[in-house]
Length: 368
Image (cartoon, rainbow, N blue to C red; front, side):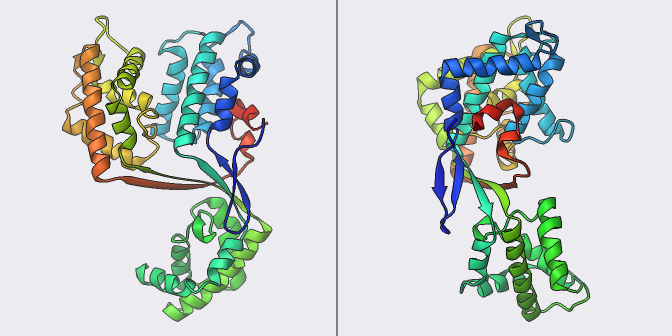
């Protein structure tokens, strides 16, 4: 497939923008998507019985998690909950085998959801090679900004190295600095730069010493980035309730979304749904309402938790489908009001440690 959309940075560098268009191109081409599914299904169907067992589905679930940016299974209770939900989408909560038709339908739904998320919140792939950092170091704003950063740092009995390490955390990609909390960046860029500049642990801390030594270290970091450029996936978004309001104001779209969501909810023998399922339901319709997946943005999770508490959503009562849809609508309204009053801006920067095409083998053909 063709490369995704591209843009040019202020330094003239071409970067890739992942906006979901290549995913939609795949899903909307029925012949190509059917071949894609056939290939993946054959790879997963180890016993060649024409169906996928729970065990055979695990690689697909792991790859979908990787494509969604989740850590490996078993490393986080929150992410493991999402992995379980992904598996449940395939199996419908039962320990039964999945046909190719079911596999294709669920995979299509996930890819369309991912595309919608990328369209709303594109990911820009940046190549950080030291040029922007050097430009910042040489700019008139460098010294005033560093003095401001120094004044914000308070480390009792801290060494000059401690202050420099803390200052690194306040520099972002817009200044040409990759995420310093990434272990690879620390061990391969920052620590060698500090060692190369000979910043002593026992060196006394003063503003003049900080400015002098930090500038030397940054120049060394810029050189190391020139020799070892770092690829960073950057995204930013503001959740202000607009997507929720758009959904709530469109009665037809709202009813269709609620109907689809309710059909996926577990029910008792009388067809009733537990109110404890509201978070699961909200996660299912998140992309339609312009919200991130559950667990992806902790500030949004706090807004949801507060709304659930205010509306007494966690009492575990069983309700009929229509009542459940009414409760879910009230929850969306509460979330919308909170976000309109206090919008949440989110910016993420993640170092890409491997080629994007191999990050998820399930979606590898998307980059071809």
